[in-house]
Length: 462
Image (cartoon, rainbow, N blue to C red; front, side, top):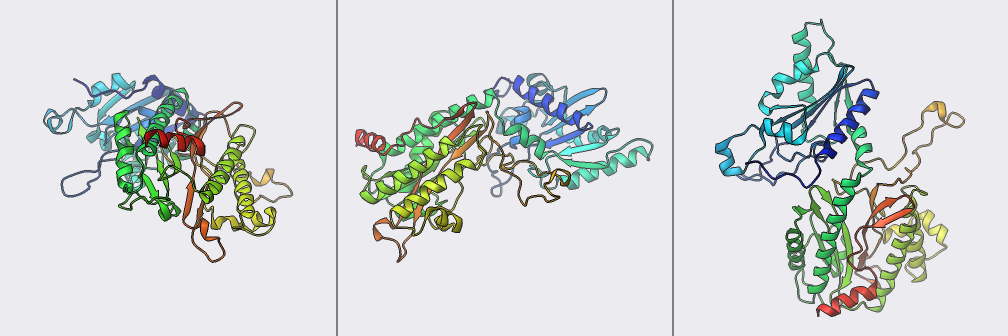
């Protein structure tokens, strides 16, 4: 018997390893060392649920703890090596089946695989002859990775007595992996469509059952139930369910607060399916009908999101959608008397941040806030204009295959200068967008976003 395979064509992982090896070869070759981390204990005898390191999984599809991937790019060729837990019939009775090195080699397409307990003996010898060591220093699953790397390098140097080359340079692999991961391949796009669909069904269920007197954590339970019923392994992040004034707390976790008649309910919830996250926010009235002030601010946020969507395409840079959303929100706040002054002056002074203090989006993928640069690489002094380099590089141009969230919001806390009718209104609308050659595809619109559609769904359920 063998463990259950991930729901992927495993050839995609091998292809990614080959792409990374080709990149390393083009930069002088070397050896890349990537770990997936260990189980972490929650209390005396119970671990936290294990979640693989995203970059390790991206390259392997392998989801057991205590595993390492070693990739070697030499002039004579490349080699991939997995270190994993050995088969252990006694432990498997308690904890479940393990792949073991032999099955992992053939199933996942590695050149070879060994017992993870042999890593510290094998690796110093493998380092000999390489000039560079590559490791994900910025997003390592192993907190003491640099200490381990230095120990392995010292062991390798001592064993050669200075007669053979040993790496003298440790390079951060994170930027290379991040640039790979920010553009999703076909297998990833398919998985993110599925993750988005499941999350949308959960939000629909929350709208169906919401009513005055229901606790936030009761809505959270409905959401989690749908996630699991549809095959998602877990929430992608701690679910936010916020009723009334709690919606003005950006990361309010579902708690015992009861929904009141007249409250808006803000739910920010996504699931993780085979490692890939969805991220949806919807805001709706507990009683099924938006009040006048609620409807006014909701329509401003929805218009801001639509403006950002129109700027989410390869013709625009990452920040263009945020700029568009800020203009719509700021003008709406001026129109309703929450801000005073001209549009341009209020944007320049950033007065809108009293009501809209976060950005309009972030990358999405194996991590909820996924890896990838938001700006272009800095220019060097030789290419600077008049010998000066700008303080911040330009925003990165969007490309097909990128996935990002689009999530404007308005949050109104009580203040003497703000009409009381708007107090305690918190609204955020968030969808996941896949950049296409001509624009973007919204992955999460299986849950309604227009006010009329939300009210209709809640009326059907009532």
